Image (tube, rainbow, N blue to C red; front, top):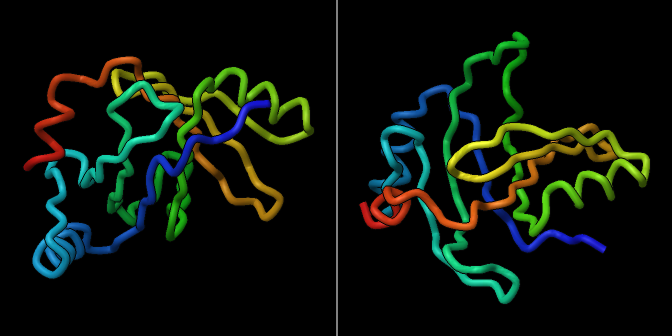
Length: 137
């Protein structure tokens, strides 16, 4: 049975992303990368091959391509095998879908019984070279 490995990230909607990011920087010491508005918190997990982390990020309040405002919070779970997890979710009658594939990993989504969209993230085998510098900025 597939299971999540941990939280991949927590994301917050903000009407003033720069202002909120500045508050977290000035008050809690969290430096957010200016390009993608996130900060990383390294961690380890026995099932990870290395490079695991938790991500905290602030995202724009602007409506998406579908015209809807993003949720106030978004949750992402790290998974070992995205395809197996999505197949398991679908076989259990859940609404689940494959998503983006990038150098930062593979992403999928599932809708929980309350209608919340949950992101599923399979990190890449090797993180991009700039990943480590983002952590220390």
